Image 1 (cartoon, rainbow, N blue to C red):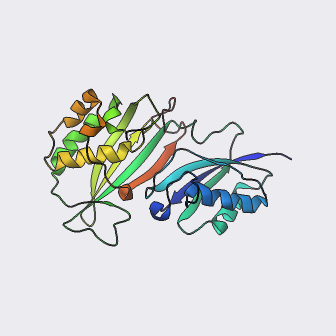
Image 2: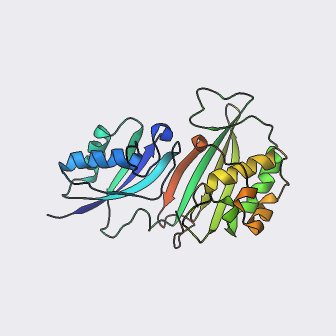
Image 3: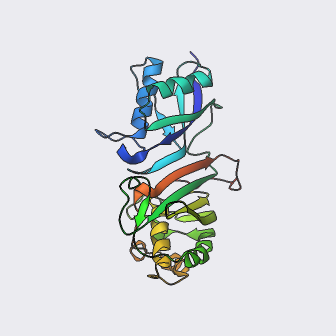
Length: 261
């Protein structure tokens, strides 16, 4: 019996998930996808799903990529249809392909793009609280736009990585960092790099928001590279505003060896 490797792209609402990775007695994205695959295969054995990286509880995805090995061949379109018929409404397979047998969703990545949505206002909007990070303090957009280029380039992001992680190499390259204004007093940030550490984007956002509020010097990001001290970055922006937007596999400017999480 020939095993077939599939590559699929997922969009999901992370609100009711305890993150992507399987956890005992927790509802996870990986867990519900593996359950659907097992049902399609009519298998008693687990069919492992490998993701491009882990997303935390409450974090969303527009373009998470996975791969899995299926015990027999189905057309990719049929696999997509079957998965979407079995998955809960907060997960959607947006693309499915038969992949080369050596393709790996995590280790073959050459870049990732994250999006972070910030809602502004004195009070938290009850209809956006699960999909934006609320910031009720004033923000100077000009200060933010001047600070964001300090992220671009290759830097040691030790100050921007959650403590307790197992990864020792904290050097990453950011290719683009931008902000735009959206409707309903919302700011949309995008970060594209060769890889991101645990909680890195949320910590970067915390620093950016404090710069925008005047709580930090204009170019404090540069100082944080030097001190390599997570405690000096302070605030971690809420998970609710973070989206894994796209994963690249040699199809973007980060076409180089991956350093992704």
